[in-house]
Image (cartoon, rainbow, N blue to C red; front, side, top):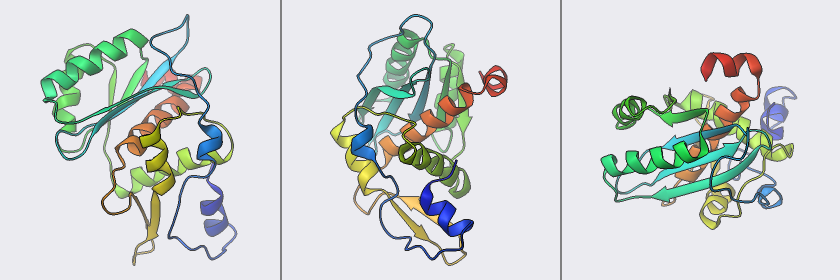
Length: 208
């Protein structure tokens, strides 16, 4: 369940240079086909990273049955009211079983509004620890060939550039290089986190 880098360092006590890329096999995984809405009894789960002006709001939707990213929407400069309407329209079209959405800062009130609009939103509070958990889970999925993604230039650029650094405390910090964004990475990571839970019957019945 861990990416090779983490396993080698934490369990094999190997020295690993923490600078550099996190995700391996990105291009090999970029073979998913986009979908426009729900197909039959397919289960879909979404990941949502909020932003308004400098950063980008990103909505990622994963087909749980095939473990493929089938929809990606990225934009900024759109007021939150319009964003919520746009998100609801897409999620209704796919009949999403759950949305894992960032709850930091402006995220929580927007999530509350989406819930009032009838969407199955689960708050995700991003901390250094929770971020590491979902990033490492996604990295492992790429390494093990368990996920396929859309051949989207922005998403691929963010994944390939993503970095990890070791802090003086011994903890690791995952982030985009200075001057780059990681909104697509975070949205996909949250979607994969939700999809992984949906694939476990007990977790699915509890969370969705």
